Length: 208
Ligand SMILES: Cc1ncc(COP(=O)(O)O)c(C=O)c1O
Image (cartoon, rainbow, N blue to C red; front, side, top):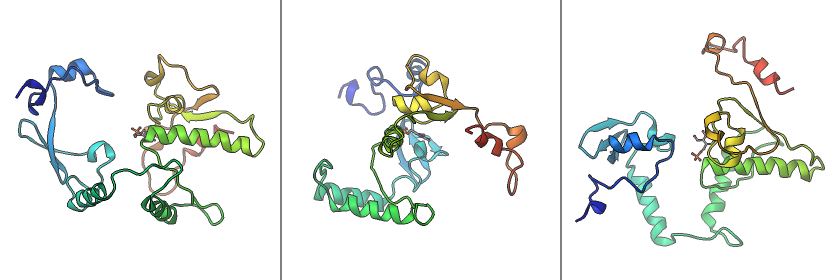
């Protein structure tokens, strides 16, 4: 066994970690080896409470047998079906079930589903849909994309443009026409209150 296949002492050079100070991390790595329920186990055997449900993507808990069994069942039946010009019944079935529970008033209910592989891809796709929609109704000059200061919308060019985290786009160009409204973080005025807060509507009115 060499250093490349020892799970407890991997070589850390090649993997360039996202949103992480790589040099500091690699000097004192925090490596996780297993997970069950709401806990991780680190490579040195410590139990760590997973207070953020993965990166907010393991909301049903770690190690759910039903999920593992369903994934195993599908992988061994058919591991991949193309979605260009071909399809698979389960994707259509899932879209129908999502549309059923999606919100929206009668006549304007969200009832169409476009699958993506990540939030960043979703945001870039949503921005494209917004531009394409305006164009298709003869309003092709409506091309402004408005986000909020401090907002996070992913790592693609669309996401960093409407996102309001300046460091994420410091060395990159923004999409043309993207701009930002002031952020909503004002604990003095907008701390949690019961019922309708007195402040906040003016932040929506900024768009007018
Ligand atoms: C509002 C919003 N948009 C986009 C993203 C980016 O998602 P992903 O990390 O899957 O690309 C996130 C992720 O936290 C998000 O919260």
